[in-house]
Amino acid sequence: MTLSRLAKAAGAPKGEVESALHELQAEYRERGINLISNGGEWQFVTHPRAKEAVERFLSGELADELSRAGLEVLAIIAYQGPVSHAAIDYIRGVDSSFSLRNLLIRGLVTREENPKDRRSYLYRISTEFLKHVGLTRLEELPNYDTLRAEKVEARTGEADQR
Image (cartoon, rainbow, N blue to C red; front, side, top):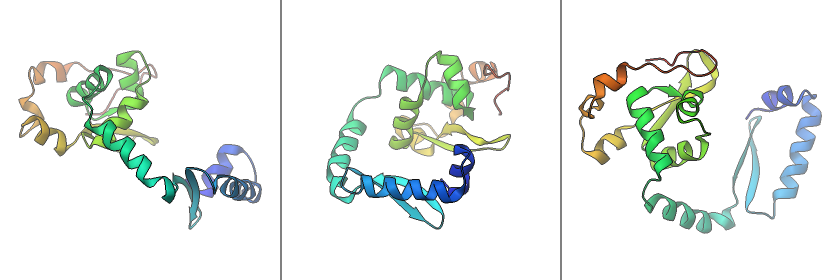
């Protein structure tokens, strides 16, 4: 995230925010994560010493079967995508952040900037998903045309894009 965006979100001057970021950077230096800066952008990353542990965790996580929640989110994206996080949450009635993250890590879905709201993303099925399930196109999914036709609106009233 850029320093400007962080300062705006915090409602504080850039200098104060940058100073706080440097303090955090020093505090996290000996932990499992680092705070790095590059050209005015700041990001939390895995500490190099924790790399192997994180890789083991992720490889184990990716080797596991998809949870019921993950399958639900995947189905919503397949039949309604591109679809926003808010719409997925609305359809499921619960927060889907963890499932979305797992699907992104596994490469089964992709996210793109929402052209109607640059602060959010739209999620769609990836080519990797099609390869994984042996389809050449999404339209080969069961009842695709029928389920695709059902348009779902998030609580904000904003219809998802097609």
